[in-house]
Length: 181
Image (cartoon, rainbow, N blue to C red):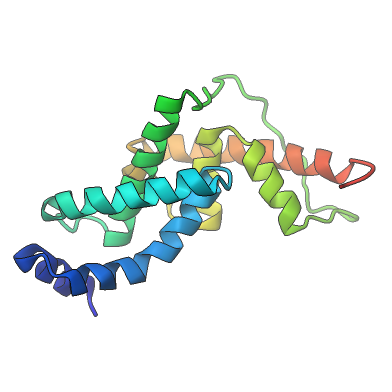
């Protein structure tokens, strides 16, 4: 069923059926996104997702359709996670003077497993992880990321470049570790 029809039904009479349809359509992907952004913290991801749905139910009448519903929900989820991390004092500040890494991780002999990638993502600073997850793993364009995170498109591009450099460095270091446990 089309999103706008479900939105209208929910707004008109708080239709539980419409809410469930939206939930069924978007919850799995959003939970997966939350896991990646929180560094695979299931408790924080579940809590953030639940809060995102509460906010959605309260603010759905303010959705103007300037972006897709998916992008709008993603923005709410990211803001909820950001606020939870801020309150918990876990948000990491990003250094303005990052090194730029240009080595190519796709050289002969390089092997990266999903486990390696997950571990490297968890080690990225929160801001870098947001950008790389949204762009490289979820497929958002820089313009959409800018809308979701309330940043300029150029900032998204710059942060992605830095995040990829940091991720390459982590993956190379992990690959060169003598024994993986």
